Image: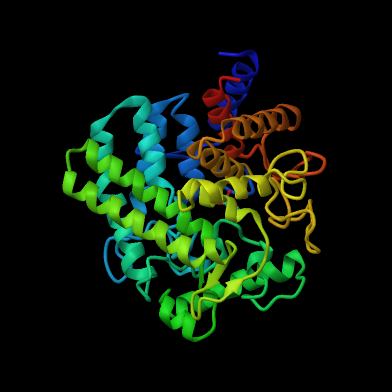
Length: 402
Ligand code: GLC
């Protein structure tokens, strides 16, 4: 292992250890960041497990088993994996339920499960995860695709993981909002979710937030491909074939409805493109929904100065009139987004570009430390300090042998 990777690894062992939460020795998870994010978040835990597989594979498995422990097991939303688990039962005030939220987050949990398995080869773990994962994806199909077009809808910006992005301003009827304005809208929206029992049809009809998001759907396609691979390892060949064909249908729908329309998110009600330029389009590489020729064009755009000013890929291009390098989700480098783009570049064999992105990100973390997100122009760390998902850098360092 190279010196920089060894240094990162040592620091990351300490970081993840300090952020670990133990629940009566039965469950365990890594909090995203001390003080600011003490609960368990779905996609964060998946990213933590992806890193933890290189350090302590048992812990990686336990984190994923913990994240599915509050999967909904009865009623209309059976199968949903909540975006937040409140192991201290503090969820009631916001959600009306003590131990979990009522929405989900980008489905990257089958990918995480497969990546963890690739290190430890533990079929017992895969077996334990298979049904929860299958149920989750069945729920997404039955509950979140009311028009049956193979693109699922998200019903709250929190479900995208990109909480305060400009992508959502118009749908939330916000015009150049302050951070407080948009936070208030997000909290208010939870009331509507409770009133309409998170029914995407009803929310759509009442003109609430309902969006077919390009990154969520691409991540879902890749997740189902991983689910197909898991089914195959477990000898469930028919399941595997059927998951594969679902993933293909999703990729086809993304291509037809989004890629050919300039890679925009769509409003769920009338499928009108939300014409806000942002980096979610690059996650089409991760989801495998584009041709090699389209990937070439996309990667050219990715390398342009407006998306890759210096310290990694920014969520909002620097040319946008609402670009703000210091404001939450409005023009920053996020570890999760950069990791997804890196993996997408590898998928389409843009190895040199991927290596450059990895190098960039490693230098950023070595220089500035572990932060929730970074200023793309200066590299300054922003948001929550000692943030666990910044540890994703180790996955890139190991893959690149840097
Ligand atoms: C913020 C991010 C979200 C993340 C959470 C915990 O809310 O926007 O994507 O899951 O923090 O880190």
